[in-house]
View (cartoon, rainbow, N blue to C red):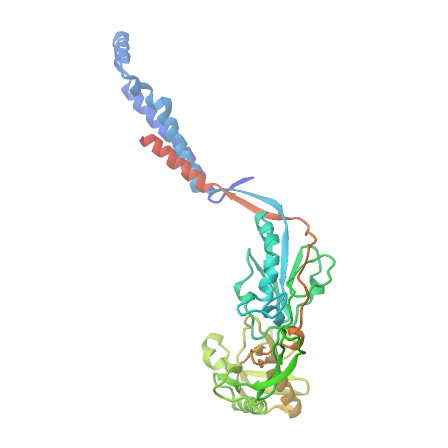
Length: 419
C-alpha cells in the first residue's frame, strides 16, 4: 500500500490543470473573428509549430514534470515486510581468546589472537550471510549479562583484551537455532554453530604475589617440561578521584596498605571515585540524607544518586529492596564510584562492615595486566567448525521511498523542455 509522508502536498499534482487552462485561454484570445474566408486565410498562414507544438508534446511533458515534482514533495512510500533470518554471533571474551594463536610450536611475535583466528574461520560463512541480506547480531557476555550490537562487523573494542576480561560466557544458554559461537576450544552444541580457533599452550605470567609475578615458561624446541619462575613486578597503586568522606578514605587507604598498594606511582590497580562533590548541581540531591545498609551493618550520611555506566554493577542501594532507591555505590573491574559526601560511623557490627567493603574492593581490583590464569594458557586443541542450525524466518519491515526517483524524473523532463 502506498502512503504519503506529506499528504497535503499531493494537491500540487493538480497544477497541470491550471497550465492547461492558461493555454486554452491564450489560444482563445488568438482565435480570429470576421468572415470565414479571413479565418481560413489566417489558419493557412499560421505556422504549424505555433498551432500544434504545445499540443503535440511540450504541454504534456510540462504537465508530467509538474506531477512528478508534486509527488516527490509528498514523499510516497510503500511499507511492507520481507522474510529474513537473524543470526546471533556469540563472541567469547575469555582471557584465552586474546592470547597469540599458533597451531604448532610457539606463537610468533605479531601472530593473530585466537579470537582473530576464529573470525578468520568464520569469514566465508559471515560473508555469505551478509550477501544474503541476513541480519547479524553480535553478542558478548560482560558484567554478568549479555550485550548485543547489530551490524555487519563486531565492535572493534570487542577485539581487544580488556583488563577485566571475565570467565567464559554461559554457552548452554546460547545453544539454539540461529546462534554461532566464536571461541577457542571445540564445544558440544546441539543447535549452535561453533568456529573454534584451537591453539597451542602459551607460556607466560599466571599469577602474582605482593611483589612478584609468577611465570610459567617452557622450551618447546627441547621438549622440556614447563617450569615455574618468579620475577619482580612494579608496585601497583590506588587512585582517588574526588574527595571521599574521611571515614571512607581512611578505610580505603587501610585496605590499600594491607594489599601493598601505594597511593601514587605505579600501574593503577583501582580507581576510587567520589562523584557527588563534582556533579552536585547536575544531580540535584548531592546533600540529601541517605541510609545504606548491608548484612549486619548500616551507614547514615548524605549522598547523591548514581546513574549506572556501561559495565557497572550496583553494590550499595539506599533502602535495599525498595523500588526507585538511589544507587550509592557502583563498581566495575578497576573502578569504584561512590556518591557519599558525608558518612557517620557504621552502626551494627563494624567487622561485617569492614569485610563487606573489603570484598568490594578486592573484587574491583585489577590484577597485573600480564596475568592470565594457567587454565586459560593451556592448549585449546585443533581448529574446528560446526555448521549452525538455521533460525526461523521472521518478517523484517521494508520501506520503499520514491522521492528521489520522482525528483530525477522531473529534472529529466525539465531538461527535455529546455532542449
